[in-house]
Length: 88
Image (cartoon, rainbow, N blue to C red):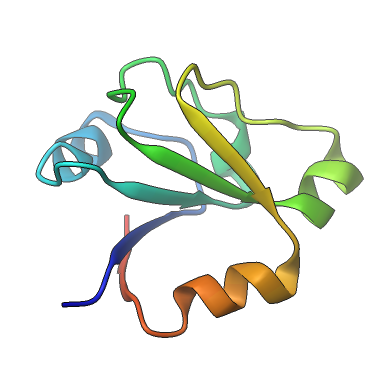
């Protein structure tokens, strides 16, 4: 069974939180406007991934109390290759 990654490219909405709550330990990849989201309603078992280059360029680091991983482009692609992707 492949890992599921939720992709967020705009600000987090209540229905996104509902989708994430369906997984025991969800993985969330954030890009663009998603970096500006308020992640406080997300359970701490969620792992948030952001593209290191985008964070450097914009200066926007996701504000999240749980596990946050900054990945370079190659590592992020490698992570997503065999994964199931759900675009929120």
